Image (cartoon, rainbow, N blue to C red; front, top):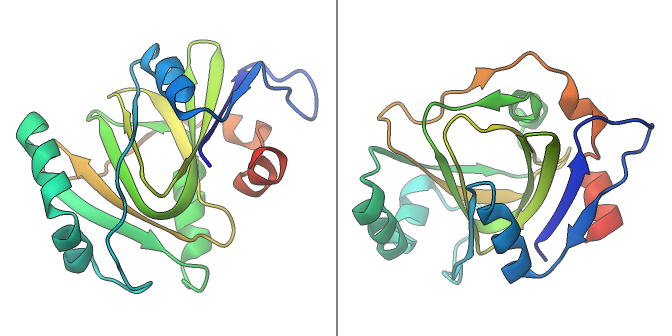
Length: 190
């Protein structure tokens, strides 16, 4: 189940308290639209093996990719997939956990599993638990980070307008450590 929790960005206690929590997809979409984030429910119903490679995933979702590509003209399309047994899972998690921005907008379509986006907009942090079937588009220059948990289990199609794909500009802030981790968030809200 997709979940949105909105927190103040100034954490005044050891455990931040959410200002608002929603599990209703239409409400989540409407609240995120107010900050320029596209959040939609798509069909993620293609039969894929757990170890399906990038080309297999792209082929299975070619129609959805083509529709997005027609609208935005993406130059780079890849698949990021991590499983609990990936020997580099800690390294990847640490990279995405650091607050960063992109000069390009970031589109992710979750075709399997889940992950937690944190969007730092204005004086709030929007925590969005994305699951299979969710499409999220984070606008360019939006400060954010992503937690896949210590035992990641997700597969996403990522689409970028710039040819180089994922390029993060890290802020150097330690804000990510002040908010619930993926596991804590899931335990409390999912």
